[in-house]
Image (cartoon, rainbow, N blue to C red; front, top):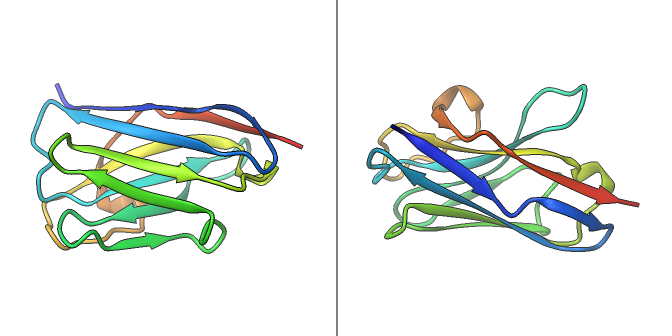
Length: 126
């Protein structure tokens, strides 16, 4: 059974930090790009960050550039999202996703991802 399990969400004050983790299991995701998306109440799911399997190439939404950092541990098939200087507008459910085999691929649209976690809530209080 394929699973992507997110953890690390919670409640934090404006300016605070959180580190999200996503552990993949059930199939090999070697060679797959991985990403983070988020969905706030009443809004559509939006891209946050992505990282390729090889070379560690990354991409970020403009709204999080300079504040969020995506990284991955290929040995553990785990991806992380370090979130600093959090703002109330970062409040959302954050989803981890894994894409199709493409070692240097870097996907920024949700349609490119085949596997999704159930999400973890991040709430930033003002």
